[in-house]
Amino acid sequence: MPDEIGLFEAMYTQRALRYIKADPIPDELVKKVIEAGIRAPNGGNQQRWGFVVIKDREVKLKVAERYKDTDRPAHTRPADASSARNDRSANYLAEHLADVPVLVLCCVRRPGGEGTTSDIGHGASIYPAVQNMLLAARGLGLASVLTTRPRRGFEKEMKEWVGVPDEFDTAALLPLGYPADGYSYGPTTRRPMEEVTYLERWGENFPS
Ligand SMILES: Cc1cc2nc3c(=O)[nH]c(=O)nc-3n(C[C@H](O)[C@H](O)[C@H](O)COP(=O)(O)O)c2cc1C
Image (cartoon, rainbow, N blue to C red; front, side):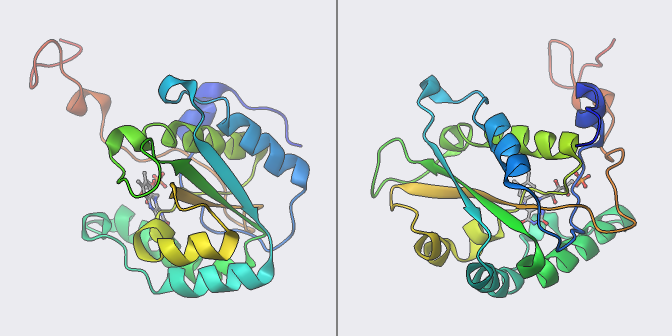
């Protein structure tokens, strides 16, 4: 295992890493990623989550086939050079998903159970866990990215293939593996803090 990196270095460099080697990864690392996930804040500490570790080639092939055919939402399509790069890597992952050694399907049970719909509060009980997992992957030197195509494009089939109970939603599918040669984590590109943060009232500069 690589030496541990600092918390802030991890947060500042945990960008999407979609170029992933086919080499297997030890279960020990997958466990560490999920152990980090289940430490996350969640509504009422009800821990309504469940994770499916997918290594079976047959299942991965089915996921990959449908993943490729699921469009990205319009609001995430490239608008500039960095987004175009993002799009290229997203397409690369879509073409190579079946070769990724481990896919982790992150699920959350709807508060009302079967037949109810999800909302933003419901998502808030799983995405902190997902982010913990991405940070843990970053810390362990494993490549990953938060993907939602299964949720958007073929959730029913995804759940059937791995037996997720009806009252659960699939929040994210995380590919996990070693970064492909020549690819590594690095600083994320984001709008500056000053542009998105206000003092006391929307539109007022912070720091003033
Ligand atoms: C809600 C959400 C859904 C996402 N869905 C996908 C996805 O389906 N496929 C994918 O490759 N990346 C997906 N991403 C990753 C984003 O594209 C990525 O976080 C963003 O472009 C910033 O990229 P960076 O971290 O490399 O700077 C998703 C991220 C979030 C937060």
